[in-house]
Image (cartoon, rainbow, N blue to C red; front, side):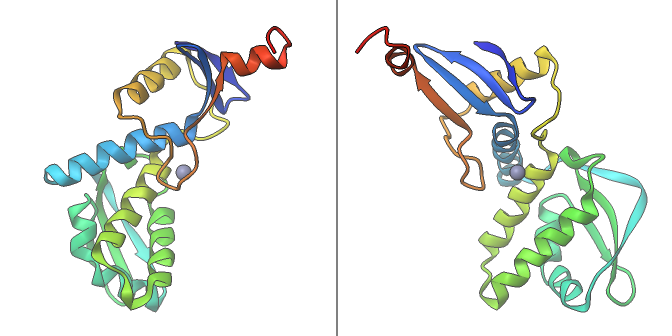
Length: 189
Ligand SMILES: [Zn+2]
């Protein structure tokens, strides 16, 4: 049961005999990550064509990395095409990224992949992209949410198996059992 929002960042939720503080970004990121990954395993995630292709100018190293993993990007809904020296045209993006800073996201993923070096396994490449997309598409800490948006977020979270952590390993919520609060208020010992 949704009680409210604290500091435009945490949702207050009553669950049984406990009060949960839910990190709205971590929760939404986890929900989107699961949905995007399921779409990926089921075939190809929904993609959205850009009205105008976006030109990406990359460093030589990042251009090489992008070229190397083009089929993986395509499998995740990114339509990219080499366009001259160290440049690419981005024609379509995963639907959940519509309106987000996709060039920035691709740069972040490539910087991360560069750290993996040649030992990067495909699984890690997929995971890195999945995580980064979920993070960029998710609502942020500080976003003002309507009551309906908050309730929808909590309902979606309840629909998932209990995942305590976001893809980055941060907790999605912190739980305060009623007993603990009662002890602190000296109602019980
Ligand atoms: Zn994030």
